[in-house]
Image (cartoon, rainbow, N blue to C red; front, side, top):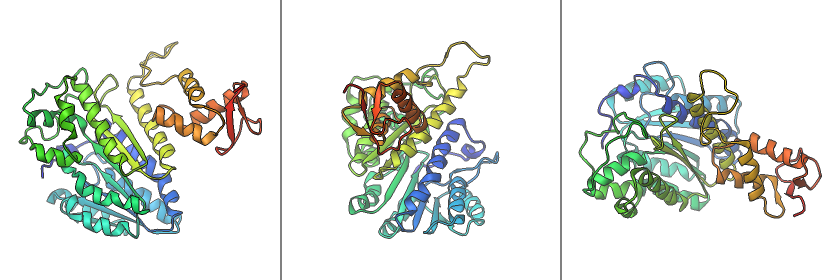
Length: 384
């Protein structure tokens, strides 16, 4: 299976990797105590772990995961938290194993992720499983193999996945496999670093089908759409496959630079828990704020100069709330409707504050006529 052509990736942590890891850590912190209430041991799997720490000292995903698991175990939680990190490269595995030695609840496994899926599947019948899948190439993914684990969701077990899906790389590989002209990298619209394993031989159509669970992508790439539209359409299609198993599927485009129109990759959460949406929304809002900071002008300005995509306006939030408020509904349901419409644009705190302001202004009413209300309290449009 293709891997990194060299280990330079781990020399220093790139800005987009910091955003990705921010989402991972921000989500895990509240996830662990919430999932522990199910009274089942928790297993966190880092499927493509790497060495655990970058050469510049920055924490990699194994260290981030173990830090949160260590804090959760220390509280203590009513159930134990176990961490399993998988890495096939000999040198990286040695570094990973050494790093994990300080965490008695963590273990390193040498080999490919797919080799250990049967073991993870067996644990899913007794454990709550959180699977972090961050391959360097899209060929590290295999839908059918992963879906055997996802099927446990339909059996009432708790399985969540946070997957890095590089739609941009997949489209370029898919176009090559279909013998369609592959567009050159446009640095004005996308990251100009080499696409992962670009020098490797193009995968077969069959292998690409295995990555995304079928050949549905072929027709997408045969349409006369532009490259950005193809990248988005393939990411949407992958999300649709995840929705066959998970009630909450939350994608987040991670761009290398604020002005780019094409995501470097998509970080996608799949969960059946009703608590997942607000947790991942707030994590993604933090990631968007990090990207917006890169575009912040050096000197203060009277008006906001950054794009609406980077800094969504409060006026739009008010409009969204009023559009989604149909009849009487609990405040929490209204918040979730807004999050699904504009995932990661506004934090739960911003949304709740805006609802309170609408109640104060008399535009929205609450059952108790107070503006500080719990999520279960009914709200409706005044005069509605």
